[in-house]
Length: 101
Image 1: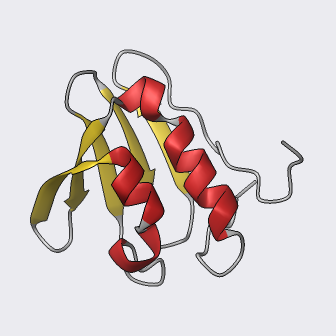
Image 2: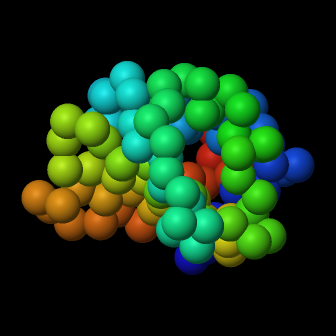
């Protein structure tokens, strides 16, 4: 099953979910836009608070790479979120837009 993450659907839930990855990714991440050949170091909380201007789900993929661990979170152009640990299996999907947390 695929999970919708569009910024107009539930931005508060998306922000919360992104911030929940702090334990896995660390306080700061490398945000990478692979199709734009651009990356920047940013606080995970800052990315989560401003994801709606940093990620355009209709056209962008953005990867959040841990600076200290072998982990990542990817938001793709199909509005799906994927979390992975290069030392373990990928967890797909990790966001259920209609779940009750």
